[in-house]
Length: 279
Image 1 (cartoon, rainbow, N blue to C red):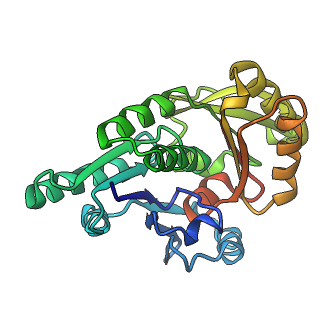
Image 2 (tube, rainbow, N blue to C red; image 1 turned 90 degrees about the horizontal axis):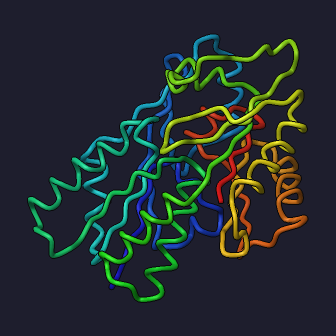
């Protein structure tokens, strides 16, 4: 079975994986003031962060069109696996499903397409994508890959610590949270996800203590680390990502640990210095 793994541009691939022909991206659009930026291979993180700092208004995102996804499905692979941002964070999943319906109307089910809501973002999308690649390389059939990938997604945990929640809040992504935190006291929340909905897990004073608390929670909540893949995504702070890796691997071994840098969408929401961790 030939296969393709397609993600929206919150699938934060490592530089090595960007060269792998099994992976393909469908970009979202970022908007800062009157400037629109495609979240594709031309994305410049440093320039984008500078642009955000120079504007008072909150940056926005727009999901890909169904046609953009459909064109990506026309890749000739026997099986196409699509991974999107949580449906609670973006319309990307809905656009990918509409594209699937249009594709199947034209091609029937001779070439199979599955759209999977990651119920996560960034490192979470990448974690699912790599699991799908593992299953395909093992020779599993299409339906088995989809079933196991969804089971894996449901067992996966996502955690994140950001310098600020403003970008998520102003974009309406924190509607389920009742409390926000006094930045004057340097309180940093430790966040997680419940079936794709952002939740608060804890808080700590200062970013370093919040990261330590995130690691403590992850180690407590997630059993059997040895069978899991740990992925840490960072926005413009590789040293912070390495520190989290050190804390996570000091006592428990993982099957693999990867660090990746956020592309445009995760950079917009996470902000400079943000850390997103999935296992």
